[in-house]
Image (cartoon, helix red, strand yellow):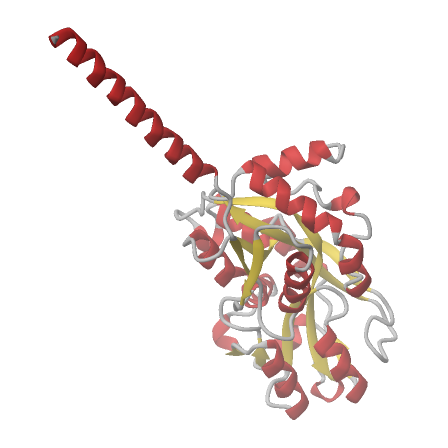
Length: 324
């Protein structure tokens, strides 16, 4: 009788343990009902692209749904993502590189839970002034009032590094942290002398402003550009072509990087593959509205960044037969 009782108790233990394990497995494998994307400021590329991505993905009838929350830009997006307050984020590659490698302002505090899903489009640093300021080169920025983007934006992050490369200490300029809308207003009213913005080309808000008054693009070139690229490897030389903005009659040498789609390691490989499949399924629709996106994602979405891609992104790349 005693042996029978022990046998029954053993069976009950195995059964309950097995049920608990199955519940845990189901809980762990259950996909989220909603993913949160942190994009950027209103009237900026990140925000408008995010809005359209949300609309397209939520209209395809598949799960999970996508929700966009506002952000100040790349640096702020990194924080929201690493703290678990967002699942996906648009981030400049120079900021992402510093965060993942623990360099520059992230020295000693690398964001090791972040992962790269893909490269969305090239971004270009633009320093915009107007004709009457007399600003034509980086050295002319000394002693001026500069709008560098919102606090926490990639534009502000870039502006600091560019001024440093140009040999202009921050105490020799008057810095204002302004949103895109505020930058446009300040340029229009003449309360700032120049504005920094990092975006796809052209930036829509500044394109509209260029229709109203004569804007001037300040080049980033020569020793300042060389020093910048030597210290910060994610920058590359770029050119703003003639006619990018109304009345722009000359090309402008500058620097740029890429816009990345990031997630955290909370998004597992299968969820990553599923999300990327949905994104690529709407790529043509997005590109028709945002021509600065890669025309064919197979050509550049998985371009070499000196950063590893997420395991699920690597699996998706193989699914699409894209060579590494």
